[in-house]
Image (cartoon, rainbow, N blue to C red; front, side, top):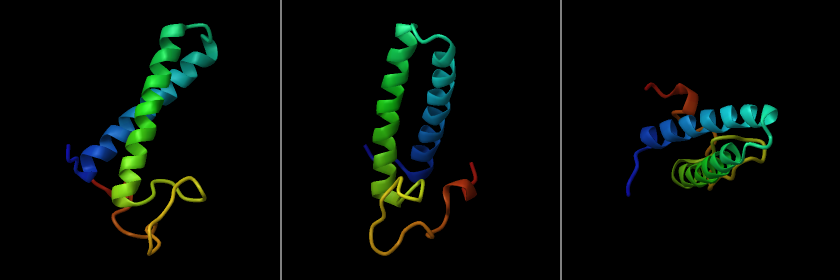
Length: 85
């Protein structure tokens, strides 16, 4: 399935938010097995989508958290935070 850049980035942003919320919830409810299962599922999907994005469009995060093809891709536009939705 072919995803365009905007759609892929929006999905990553939604999963980032979900993972953060589940993380905060699990900080206060560490024995909630269903929440932990949801967190692990969301995290797995998030890793896969981040990898897909970086392979197609370049790094999302710099300083060793992502790789870059040659030439250095970090400076290519538009940067994720500059995209309009």
